[in-house]
Length: 353
Image (cartoon, rainbow, N blue to C red; front, side, top):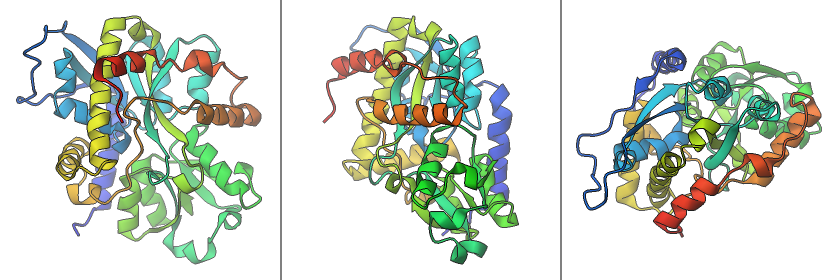
C-alpha cells in the first residue's frame, strides 16, 4: 500500500487553510456533456464554500460529469477548514452556497436574523456510513476501551458546537460522562495525524479520508465509527444564502445538478455499480488529492439522492446547543429547513428509488 506521508497531509491542510480567503475557479472538463437537445440555460457563476472532504462528493461528481455545466453554472469554490467559518461570508454574500456541519454558529446567526436556509443533505450517518469516527492514540489504546476511559483525556474536534461534538457527547454519556469531563481541543481534520503522532491528543473525531489516513499511519486505532453512536445523524447539510435562494431559477438549477451528482454517487456506493464506483473514486481522488487506492477502502458518508434532510437529528443538535448555552435559544427548524428546491429538482428528475 502506498504510504501517505505526514508532510503530504499537512501540505493539503495548509492549502485548505490558505484557500479560506481565496476564491479559486472550479474547473469543468473539456468533455463535459452538453444539453444540446434543450434550451441553453442562462450562464451564471455560483460561489460555494466547501470543506474538501468526501461529503463533497456530489459536488465533485457534478462538476466532473458536467451536470453543473448542463445547467449553465460555473462553480467558484472557496475552501474552509470547517463549515462554521462559512457563516459570515454567506451572510455577507461573499459565497452563495455552503456545505458542512450545522451548529451554533449557523443557528445563532439565523436566530438573530441572518437569512440562511438549509436546503439539502450533504452527509449523514445512516448505518454503514460511519465516515466520522472516534480514534484513540495507539500509545494509550490499551487504556481506552470505552467511553468511561476518556475521562480527562484531550480529544480533538475540527470545531466546537457543531454536529460531531453532539456525537462525542452522546458517546461519553453511554459511559456516564459528558463533554465537560474531557478536554476538547480544536484541530483541523488534516492536522489530527500530527496530534496523534506527537501525543498532543489522546483521541479525535476526524472525517474520511483522514480517518483511514490516520489508521494507516499507525499513530491511532479505531474506537468506534460514529454511525454506531448516533445512527442516522445529519452531519452535514447544503445551505443557501437568502440572496441566492431568491434567484429561484438559478437555485433550482443548482439543486438539479447537485442531485444528479448525488444520484451518481448513490448508484456507485449504495447500489454497488462497479463502473460508476471506479469513476466516482477517480473523480474524488483528483478533487481531494488523495490516492485512489486509499479512497477505494474508506467508509463513505450517506448522501440522500433526493436531498432529504433529517430534521429530527437537527433538532437534537439544537437541543444540545441550547442546553449547553452556546445557542441563545431555539429556532423554528420548519422555517429554516427549506426543501422546496430539492422538491422541484426531484419533480424535474423524477424520484430516485
